[in-house]
Length: 505
Image (cartoon, rainbow, N blue to C red; front, side):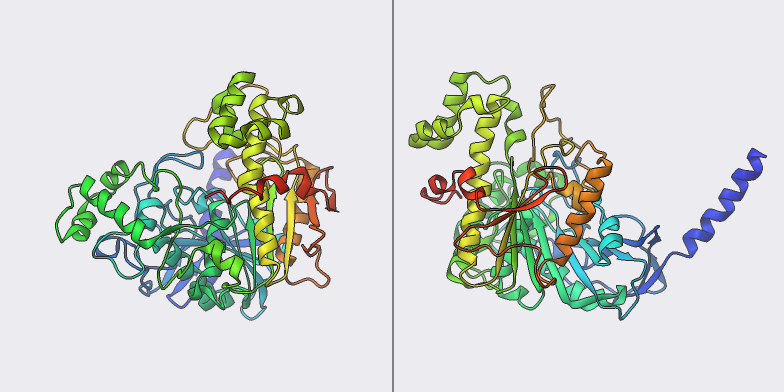
């Protein structure tokens, strides 16, 4: 009987696979995976592989293919070192995206479209650790998750490159949005109703997208999660860094670019450390793609004026201080001095260790408020002068804690990092760098948040209050499934103090 059952399963599986949904794209047909309430189309190329002469080159169109291409597995992570989001990757052929569509979707249904760009400091991360199936099913939206070149492969500026040297990462993201505009109708999406969104570095990048003339008309609204607009680095400065990097790898001739392109991925990754590249992946300005710094563009109104949802988590940087455990009172004060200099005494009074379950969290709260919460609120106040803006705070401190998928991260026993950086991603995109699973109540709340996200900029009246002089913020999940407007968030994060200082870079 058992043998007969196994034989039947073997016979059934290929039939189900063969009947997966097929969509006809500009470049050819793809067959996806049929799910319970949504269909998945994974690993679809949106640009040619950036290899050989296309390394450090603007993304080129995908070559068309004949027949039906299987779209059943996420593309590989772009080249990156090991991190909490995954193992080291050396695969340059990585410009792929995933599409999730509800079962009701058909060509011509004109469903809303949500495009999500992952975080990871623009140094690591991949689409494979997220999933848009549930959002597509619950909200009847088309969800798209593109990859993009990271770190030195996306941000290097060196002699011999074109006029937009240093902005290959941004060019990939624009190319993905253009692909959406050309192809999303085939999945049942509305190319005129696209929300661009990103978290952490992905949020910073979405701010850069809005400041780039190249992305105008590719979005109807934008959601920026836990990542304020950055000033970036000038192309002249980036070019000097690039020359130093080329010299380090032995590429000192007038053919430095050809020399670098001939290097194996391993050598590029291993040689790339220190300088601005080893700290944070930030965009290059002073180019046709990004004429001025993103933060300046937002403040001066030189950006695409679409509705903005800007937000952060309540305890952004709590878990990022675990490596300092155990921290004494004297050690905490020393950390305040290292990070905040002459303002250390003021900071220690605003964040007394007695108010936190662990001393490390007092430091994390200060860093998170300065770099995330208050920078985002300042950004919201600047953008609100030019376009409708709403702000949220994700406050669920019961969410499952972060777990590393790659590098070892020290987390002392008994620590729970509250509503930490990336915490909301479990609710929206089934983020795998979390211990999970969500409780039944949290799953209900997740469905509610997905509706809020997809509805932003589309629902009338909006579920999100306008951010204006009252500084009203929508607080999400402070008490179970609660969603409550609050005017106290700005003061709770000591933003009058932080925003009186110069903006952190």
